[in-house]
Image (cartoon, rainbow over all chains, first blue to last red):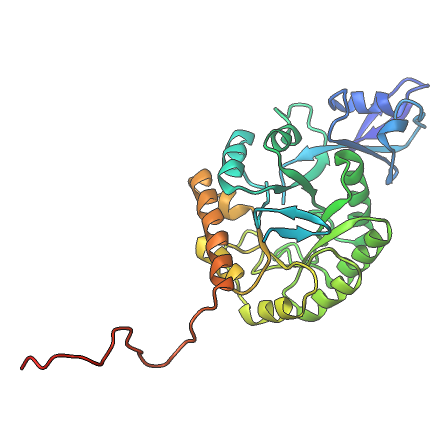
Length: 68
Length: 255
């Protein structure tokens, strides 16, 4: 299915989860300092494995950077 | 007396913004020299090529994390960013920034207040970056913010404290800590903020973009300490004319 990960179109398997999207974005697998929003809503880390991704969703995978 | 914000105490009154350092190594050196126990950080899209993690560096240094909402121009975006930061960093503390103008990076007062109210209601410990406006500072405190963080001058400008009178008004009325945030250029600016009665200073560029960040970090640490001590020590009044410090009695007649 087609989704948008960090602004780029991506093909993910049909039963992909948020955890798969995090991996596709290139984030560290332990998820430390990483946060995910789908269509603007936060997906808590504890639900990444269980939350299915749906076609056409906008997925933002964010990490810590220097700032402020 | 340590700095106390929302029930947490800090021996250092200097908060380090981590933006602008050339590398995490330079940042780690500066953090150590600054003595800061609280450091800001931000969230951006994952960069698979990024080397090292700022969270690991801050953890290793024992610094507490203060996520920011830099880059947000609306209350809606700032609230969403704060919620993402809470998830990423497992802290409900947030340096709330809602910018209203991309050239000056001055805060948008109405969006800022709206975001502050929503985040306080959602259980966040909110430290808002605000204009040097005493009325807005009071509104933010009334909204339940844990501190108010007025700017000295625009972010990264290094212009110091442009309105010391307003800053003093904010300090006089505040019932929460006042942290001077933004505009510091060099050590004397930080000392002036503390002499004006601020409870702390938050700065990034003044250290991170200095030619020698670690040495400037030490200068800032000393300036904050010196300013705090001077504030607590009761400075002499300003006079128009001199007042001799050596006794005028007992002068010999020599000619």
